[in-house]
Amino acid sequence: MHYSGFRVLKEALTGHKGWTPAWRTPEPQKAYDIIIVGGGGHGLATAYYLAKEFKQSRIAVLEKGYLGGGNVGRNTTIIRSNYLLDGNEPFYEFSMKLWEGLEQDFNYNAMVSQRGVLNLCHTDAQRDAFTRRGNGMRLNGVDAVLLDREGVRQMAPFLNFDSARFPIKGGLLQPRGGTVRHDAVAWGYARGADSRGVDLIQNCEVTGMRIENGRITGVETSRGFIGAKKVGVAVAGSSSRVMSHAGMRLPMESHVLQAFVSEGLKPVIPGVITYGAGHFYVSQSDKGGLVFGGDIDGYNSYAQRGGLPVVEDVCEGGMSLMPMIGRARLLRIWGGIMDMSMDGSPIIDKTPVDGLYFNGGWCYGGFKATPASGWSFAHLLATDRPHETAKAYRFDRFEKGLMIDEKGMGAQPNLH
Ligand SMILES: Cc1cc2nc3c(=O)[nH]c(=O)nc-3n(C[C@H](O)[C@H](O)[C@H](O)COP(=O)(O)OP(=O)(O)OC[C@H]3O[C@@H](n4cnc5c(N)ncnc54)[C@H](O)[C@@H]3O)c2cc1C
Image (cartoon, rainbow, N blue to C red; front, side, top):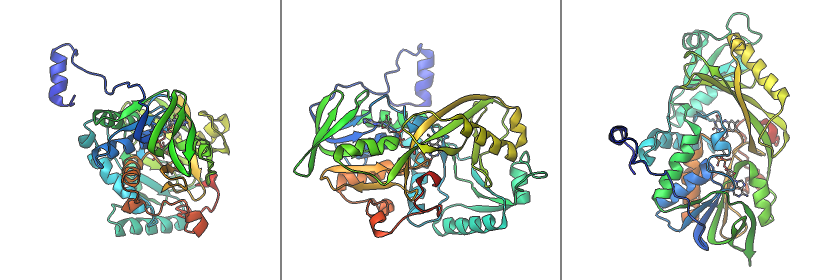
């Protein structure tokens, strides 16, 4: 079914009896050409582009829970391409360009809203670093505007300019950055993949991998063995668990990240604002809730819930930046499991097992990467060659010392 304004009107006039389910609920077949493990944003986008752009068929996505129940439906919805390093910037800009045409492409309203992402700076050194980053972005053809203090004040007069512990000195703005309704991204890709013949199999946990003579022949699941010529793993926070089925130990740790939503308020925050002197970022949803987050919980965990000390820490960051939010009540809090890599950058690569491919290490910035990650992973699965913009995301960069350490934090996964 094609969604359009005309369709909404027609259904409104005929009692909404014509809507069909957005995707099927098929039984798993005995074997597929390609199996994608993980029905999050990256897995569903991969399946979608495999079918649509790379004309592959006999594809299944195996999801242990329900589609979109992982981080794709738990994040704070921010998209941006304000990276500095060459290994990252072209990839995230590719993603941004895909976001810009995504809703028309998969015929689904994902509420892509390019309302701007503003990173605040609070010291001269930070302003220098932002200037360098902005210039790096511009050299890659990406939009970047350096604002002085008055420029920031004009955009966000409610920030604490006058009695702040860390005075605002300016900010780096990416006007094309913004937010996207996160779970609609999963639904849009799911619907698009399903309509191109991809089997989306929910409640189907991958519990093992069958590997014969160095080649994968299929996966053991909670619904029995399913054969495959190729298997692509995109399970985010569960990466190390799932890849251990193939005997692999990954250069990554799993940590919890929490998200917070306040009660609905009148529109006040124009775009996304990030605090440069503490870990706090905030936007306002179309329903009026302040959507915000901060640091990860700081200990390794596979639990999809976080601890109270981080709630206090994040709210303190918010209060010091914009004291007026202390009057707003918190409505909802949840957590997701982050696949934190050693250098803070992802991996989209083949593995030593023939036919087994891996996509992960997104840390807490993988939502904005969803379209490019899906496209690049599909490219790798279909052609056995890395996509132009994802060439640096190799496993062997750690062995070869070619780290992509955007934050300059070294091998400290919890700090990236
Ligand atoms: C609180 C929070 C805030 C965030 N904010 C942002 C943000 O503002 N911007 C941004 O860019 N990124 C953000 N992120 C990060 C982003 O959400 C993730 O990097 C990205 O969603 C991960 O990819 P995914 O969507 O494929 O993961 P997921 O949605 O987690 O998908 C992985 C899927 O694999 C499934 N799975 C796991 N094990 C198995 C198995 N054995 N068998 C079958 N299926 C399995 C899981 O059930 C899950 O559905 C945030 C994350 C969190 C938690």
